[in-house]
Length: 349
Image (cartoon, rainbow, N blue to C red; front, side, top):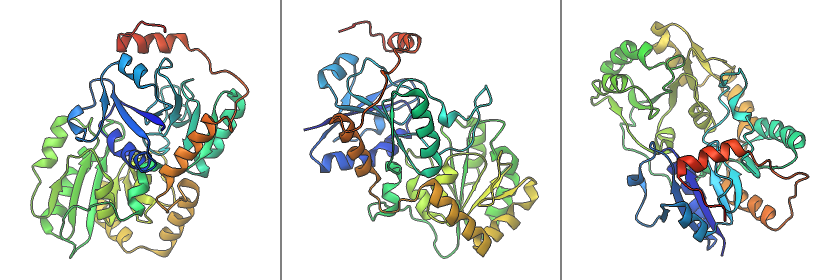
């Protein structure tokens, strides 16, 4: 029986990894969670989910693989370290001006990529570094979107539903700029509104939008955005990887001041154009629909709900020695010293 550890530091990681957990259980494997840092809430754990509360407990559990929807994982944890990503490549740049999605931090043995547009860059990086494998699997997080297991929230389906999502970054967020327009449109009852923000969104902006709640607008606080994605007919956003999560359903996205607007988006820069752009997107114009379809082929072509299975199959190939590497993973003393310090773990056995 295989054992797997989920190493998480954000509440949204629960929804990211639970489809993978279901497939592990279906195959007869065992799962344990390790919660790291102050931004993840243990109250989101379910009664049937096992949690390990110390590094010693992780060592005793001795996982075959560790799945990480984040950027780092302790080298001193047992098992193959597997990157499954916390979102799609949204084009965000780090402080050095590089795309952070492709930043290699010397932590992982296997990258399970979502589609061709990320697989090829990671394979080039694998050739360059020589110590990790790359397998295109699709993103396990999205499996419920393509199955009948996802429960949708109840909203008024007699009219179209707009899902507004926004990142927390002051330079990227659309929330403060569109508040007056959303306020005005929500009172008309023309559309049903769902509003869901990144958990790091400033509290005063959250309270501002909560004040708009009515029969036409619902502010949703959740660790799982997937039911909202399935419910909505169009998304309003800015620059966030949740855009791609919505697009894979062949649904339109309207963006405000996106840092890299593409033909598969409906981007605008003047708040007073919000109603016009949403109306246009909801008409599903042929050119826009065609652009979305072509983009999905590169982003995430898998619509079978079986990405979790492909991830586990890839891990199994590593464990059986069917996927090999040319070099040993760097020790990265500085990063692992910092992780030991944060975890207060100084044993070297």
